[in-house]
Length: 406
Image 1 (tube, one colour):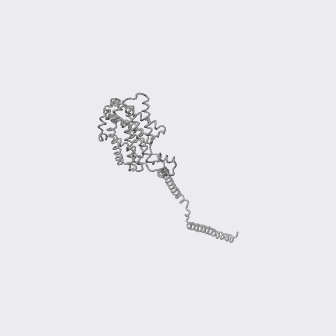
Image 2: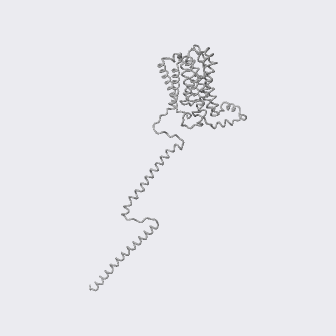
Image 3: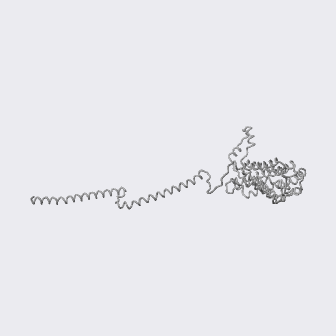
C-alpha cells in the first residue's frame, strides 16, 4: 500500500479517537446534569435525596430501632390504659369490687339459720354446764328442771322462734344481744332479788344468754349500717353517742318508774297469792329508784339501741308521699280500711315492728321462764309479772317514737 494512503488512514484513526472520548464525556456530563436536576426537583418537593449504598447500610439499623421503641412504648401504654379501664369498670357499673386476698366463703342461705340455732344451743348448754360446775349448782338449787319432754319441747321451740324472729327480722348481733337482754332479764332479776340467787351467778347467766344469741349472729351476719360507724346512714347525727345517751336515759327513766311503782303497789299482792314458796317480799316493799338504777340502766340502753337507732335513721321513701296524699272522701271502704291498717310511713313501720317484737319476746319468755323454771308460780302470777315488764317495754317504745318523730 502506498505510504500516503497509510498516513491518511492513521490520521483518520487519530481523529476518530478523540471524538469518541469527547462523546462519552459529553454523555456523562449530560447524565450528571440530569441527576442534579432530579435532585433539585426532589429537594423542592420535600423528598430526601438518594443515598449511597454505604450510607443506606449505616442508617438502616437506626431507622429500624426508632419505630420499634416507639411501638413498644405505645403497646405498654395501651396495656396500662386497658388495665385501668378494667379496674374502673366495676365502679362505673355500680358493682362491688372483691377485696384482694382470701375471703371467707359464704354459706348457702338455707344452711345459715340451722347453723345459727345449733351454735346458740351449743353455747348455752356448754355455758350453763360450766356455770354449774363453778357455782356448785347454785342456779339449779333455786330453779327447777323440766319434768316432761313436753316442757323441754316448749322451751326449745320458743328459743327457736325467738332466734327466728331475730334472724328473719333482719337483726344483727348487737340487736340480738339487746333483744336477749330484754327477754331474759326480768326472770333473772326475779331470781336474784326474791329467790336469793347470788349477783355473780345472775350476771354469769345473763352473759351466757347474751353471748349464745349474739355470737352466732356475729359470725353469720355483718353489722347493720346503723351500727357500722363507717357506713353512710340517713340522719347519722340522730344516732350519735350523745343522742344514744339521751334516749337511753329516757328509756331508763320509763323503766324505773314503771317497775318501781309496780313493785310497790301491784306485784306484792300478786306474789303473795300466786307465788307459792317465795322466800321474801322485802325487795318489793323496799324498792327505790336508786336501788333499781343498775338494772333499769341496762334495760334502757338495750331499748334505745334496739328501737330508737333504726327508727331515727330510716329515710323517707316514695310510698310515704302516697300515704300523705290519701283522700278518705274519695276512697272506697276497702281502701280506707287498708289505709287505717297499713297506711304508715317507713319510719313508723320500723318502730312498730321493733317495739312489738321487744314486747312479744319479753312477755312470752318471762312467762315461760317463770312457769317452767321456778317452783310454785301459777299462770296468773307469771302473766302479771311478765305484763309489768312488757308494759315498761311498750312505754319505752312510745317515748322513743315521740323523740325520734320530732
